[in-house]
Amino acid sequence: MRLCVNTAVALVACVQCAVVSAQVPKTNRRAPIKLGMSGAEVRTILGTPLIYRDMKAHRSVSSDQAGVLPPSNDYDDVYEFTTPLNTYELQTHYALDGSESRLHAVPRLIAIYYELDKRISIKDLAKILDDLPEAATFCGAECTIAGRTEHSSVGDDFLYLHPKTVTPAERAEGEWIASIFGRFSSQDAPGRWYPTISVYYNQGSITHMTFAEDLSLSEGPVQTTWKPQGPTN
Image (cartoon, rainbow, N blue to C red; front, side):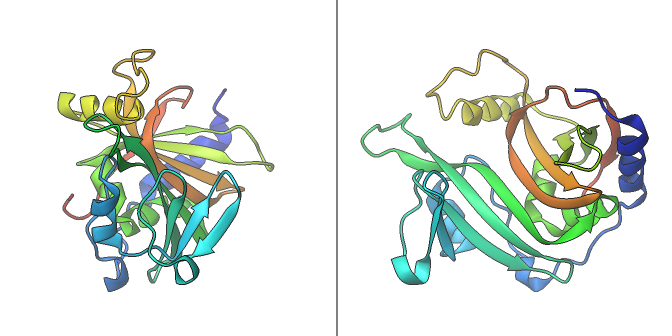
């Protein structure tokens, strides 16, 4: 899928110009959650979800109605955070890790979804990244940014961020998570799984982002980089 140079390069260039730290409010001053964490560890950081969302049944129920349910691969936990920049819906997706016990498999985090309340220009991507604690954790010292444009006015376009440096231990952990903790083989593309921030934007405005282990395929050439403005966690 070819990169539309006239559109995507100009947008990514704007990202490079806009690496300005956003003020992170007290409401979002928390430790980042990380892929591979157990559901209990995630709950320690984020607390009780506002909503439990069953993606297969397209049904949601509030924790006020259902009470406190344990983390599960049967539904996603949904939270909401507000900063001076925006309000975000954060959704955590778990898979069962039965590598130590099949009878008492542990729900572990395999993907994080952020939905933006207010659309933000792709030119201000750096401000959004500075606003989300997980971005610095994913990127480490620096992330590369690649782009792919498939539509001019209909559907989503994409940017992809990968850490510029990935250690062998991080690569092994990524393959472990991508294989759903050993349930499936990751050998179809060994060594190509990367911590990936996928940025979805429509007509120049960011709508949502995902944090997951993914294959770096058909993303187009690296256009620029992003460096977290504060210490990584």
